[in-house]
Amino acid sequence: MLDHLTIVKHPLVQHKLTLMREVETSTAVFRQLLREISQLLAYEVTRELDMTTKRIETPMQPMDAPVLDGKKLALISILRAGNGLLDGVLELIPSARVGFVGLYRDEQTLQPVQYYFKVPDALEDRLVIAVDPMLATGNSSVAAIDLLKQAGAKNIRFLCLLAAPEGVARMKEAHPDVPIVTASLDEKLNEHGYIVPGLGDAGDRMFGTK
Ligand code: URA
Image (tube, rainbow, N blue to C red; front, side):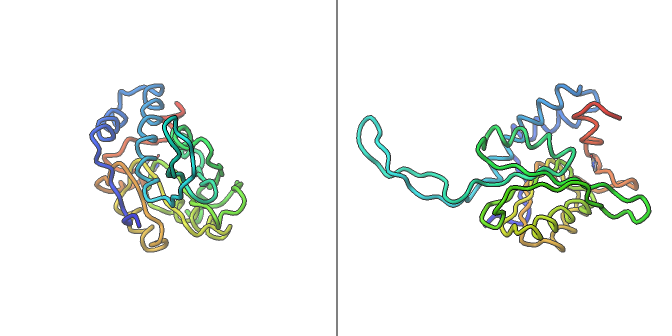
């Protein structure tokens, strides 16, 4: 069982994250770093998967060799910034099934509203990894996990690049069964709900929008 919060302290992850935080880093470099770091984070979030063995022949002799057990896992991108993490994770797990959850914030109620939801079948039989680079207030992450659970998901992990203590606490309260893997637990949220020191708006930085 993974801990509720895993901070990946690997030197390569931390070095790449520092480059991504820098305000001068270009969109192209940011995107490339995100792809690289997401593969390293994918390695951590896929720890402790169920394994079985398969009878194979090496050039030397037969053996019972370890392989992943069960149905293909499901990667769920929380739009739109989740797509930046998704690409790298998919390179490491190319046979994963992929889903998308789209949420926007209602400016009156400040609550997340669903505008898109398309996920693989049989979620209840799969490990489901939800990806979103920034765990800030936790509102959209909690709402996305709510939707995944309503769709049947029982075994969910959450992968992000940066987390704020407020978002981690909100997730722990709403979904204590969902382990979080991140590259950093930053200091706090500012008055606009951005993570500080953070890296700014992850979607804008990866897609070159403002
Ligand atoms: N979303 C972002 O892209 N950045 C933050 O700092 C918080 C939420």
